[in-house]
Amino acid sequence: MLQKTSHYMRQANLIGGEWVQADSGATIDVINPATGLKMGTVPKGGRAETRRAIEAAAEAFKSWRKTSALERSKLLHKLADALLDNQDSLAELLTMEQGKSLTESKGEIGSSAAYVRWFAEEGRRTYGDVVPSPWADRRILVNREPVGVIAAITPWNFPSSMLARKIGPALAAGCTTVVKPASQTPYSGLAWGALCEEVGIPKGVVNIVTGSAGEIGDEICENPIVRKVTFTGSTEVGKILLQKAAATVKKVSMELGGNAPFLVFDDADLDRAVAGAIAAKYRNSGQTCVCTNRFYVQAGIHDKFVEKLAEATNSLKVGSGLEDGTQQGPLIDGKAVEKVEEFVADAVSKGGKVIAGGKRHALGGTFFEPTVISGATNDMRFTQEEIFGPVAPIYRFEKEEDAVALANDTVYGLACYFYTGDLGRAFRVMEGLKYGLVGVNEGVITTPEAPFGGMKESGLGREGGHQGIDDYLDTKYVCIGGLGL
Ligand code: NAP
Image 1 (cartoon, rainbow, N blue to C red):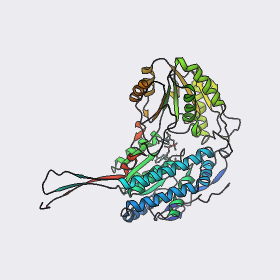
Image 2: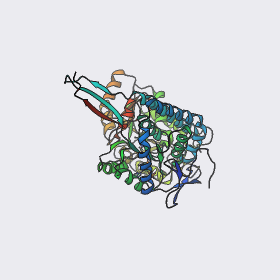
Image 3: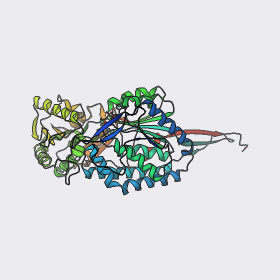
Image 4: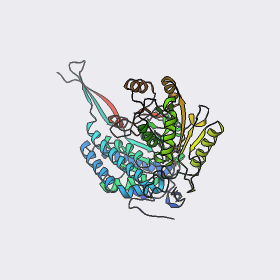
């Protein structure tokens, strides 16, 4: 049953400027994780619908690529304004389908607008080169042009801002798009279609298809019209898409899983480290790719850190994201709760000590208590696996080099954090960590101005920064001869 409507809530797909249902009429239910109630449905599209969306994007590309960078920039600024003008209602929609607190959802919509605005500006600076020619009568130009139709597949944990990092640079560069939002949180994605329409982005430039992930993914990967796939999600699915996209040699950007370490050295500012730990662990109920997975704390500060982190964790307010003051909402679904329970049981069976939380929350449903486990050891599952929930395992260490080695002992390389008051150590440790994002004495570091992305199995490419538009541009070398100079 529909609980509440938002002006931007669409229960249809956007293909070539038309809001449509799946050919079969099949739909997917969308559930509010805080209540377990159905919010509504979205079409269960497949290959045919995706193919039409790709063709619509290809048609729109013919004229969109010819618009000036300034014209596209103006439209993107309007889009950013529309996001901010409707921040409250978009945040409410996001909280209802995803669960995070309203404060976090407003932050996410604000971040979406900031990314769109950043790329509205970066799109005006996609400079080429005029290269000194080795030939007297020829000139060398290096131009940058839009790659063409791009396809974006996004996860449920940031259903709005993950689109901003893809739609923003794609449109700024002159590309057109086919977007597939996650099935559990499709409304924040479909809202982008409604917003793009409202601000005057031409039909077919942004197409949005919901439905069967496998079918949509296969069409995207196999269709030669699509020239780039940008994916945010698990490493497992990223690997499948990389293999499939290889058949037509598409450009790829992959923002995949993480296993973030958080190192606290004896010389750290303890209170600052605890505040950073809370932000880096429990944001979005621990369901972010940059959330801390492992806390490594040096022996001299260990006990005090554990005590203070447990105290701060116990004071977090758990509840429906729509309620005032909520700091941690529900997990996305029952499976996520079961996975977190398994991690806790595994740790306890191997000697870990639960010192905060540790079980399902009294609120029931998919709520879980913010949890701290001390005495974590390398044989526990969460040492290598992404927790994606509100569990903070704490490992004790003695020597700096051991902590850096343990931090790097993972296939992932997305985000890491460390706290120290020693400048030399800050540089040594920063240079030793094999991660794409490093927070030094900071627990939340994402911003549109900086490149976001991982090393190793955490991905390929960068979103944000001036680098964030590069993957949407092809480089063309032009040699002009016979100039008779
Ligand atoms: P997921 O299961 O990989 O799903 C992500 C998206 O891929 C969804 O839209 C999903 O569709 C789709 N998908 C699933 N199987 C597919 C297939 N075979 N072909 C094409 N598409 C397919 O990830 P998730 O559980 O939504 O998100 C959590 C993961 O994302 C975590 O690992 C997290 O670390 C990662 N993440 C990374 C970043 C980053 O920037 N590095 C940011 C956020 C999240 P359905 O929803 O329809 O299944």
